Image (cartoon, rainbow, N blue to C red; front, top):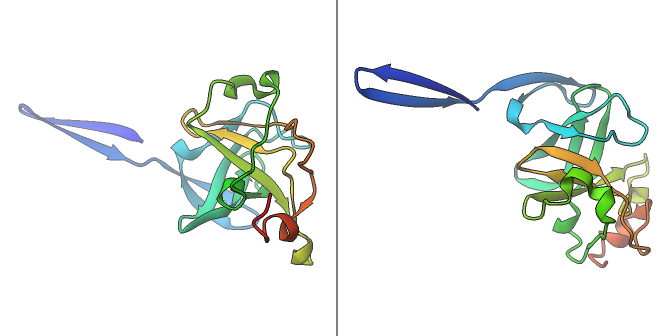
Length: 166
């Protein structure tokens, strides 16, 4: 938010104005987002070295599924799952050196998992092995590989999420 200060004699009025930017996306066309919602990935997502800035696009009424939209490349967007909303026992463990700048983040850490949705939606999969971690305060993110052997990179959603079992 941009802070605007107006002074009238001895009265100071502070107005906070949301700074909006318009981004072009392949899936949603042109949309407005708040500038302070930008997330910087300090290490690019594998296969996307040109994309370091992203934003989460979601329905405010249901944040279970959303889109991780690249601000650098309009055609790059990932469907992501806020896994903890449906798998309460999801508990990925990470090597401390893999966390990098996120190692001191605990309370502000958001965990999303990339989803692949094929034409036959019942075959949709979620990558539980390599979640996307986002520090919601510092607005930085990174994809990290979990040590957990029980998590797969192609876990069928219907069998894992659909049943609510871990």
